[in-house]
Image 1 (cartoon, one colour):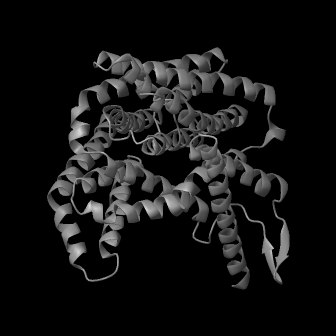
Image 2: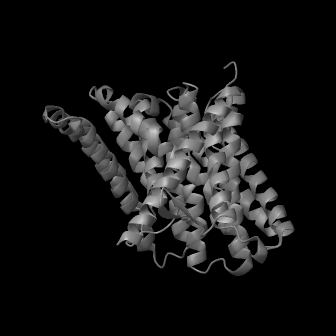
Length: 415
């Protein structure tokens, strides 16, 4: 029992170090007029190098107590990874806050353009990914997986940067978030087909689950959330309204995940609905304190740390990996910018706004990793090629996450 406690508190010590390093590097980047999120990702890369590469398994004594250097994804007895859990809560908070900042009327206003942007951001990157895989000498099924990896946008970094620039609640910001929700759903459906749907009924059932989630939970939200928040306000306990709000966030994320959609979509929907309620102003500062003070920085540290967790260079040709990474990452960035910008332009946005939307749609994260791991587990890709694709996907998430804040800042400069 004592050994288990030492392991747990060693993880907590490392998380404390992660928070300190994230804040210091974030502050350093802000001083140089760059987004803090880049410093937080860099903190994860540095931490990964220290923990995994240099001091893996290292034990030392602190005030007379033995402390082992654990992995940040060190599994607990129930199979959960403490750091991954905190990181996943971090992205839920980020999308929830983004939802609170966006008005439903704004989303409705950009409904048409969001659909056009999502279509462009799915079709072009997917085609370019498939063609790139075939040009690299991969089999058709491996090339299709690469195409699917490039489809879905992860707006966590974009939302954070737009929030920092105070442009999230604009037509461009709403378009990016709306488009990301749509292409996330499309990515889930394409993944289901790629993994081999056995019958038409399977396809219908997947689509029905997604439709039911949006119809039911949007309806429930519009009809019931106001009464639930009113009850939370009447409960005479400290921060009771905040507790009720957090429960809604987690419930929506749970049912979104069970419906076959990413849990972050549920968090975003919950944020949008709660943000329309006048009581949201009573808990918004508390939500941001919890999110930005603890959970969200840990998510971006985890992004950087993840680079090291899967890297096994001794089993790979670094030249081959480098070539594949350069091609796929280049295609992932160009495909989103061009595809989404074309969609935005066709829907009536200005050229400047279209480029801003395209840049905001660059990041890839959770769904890209889900697709590649699902393809590996189902045997669609495997062996050395599977490892190359996995590591390339991880590198793509790192690079697109790092470059997006820089490009967004340029795109919105003097805008």
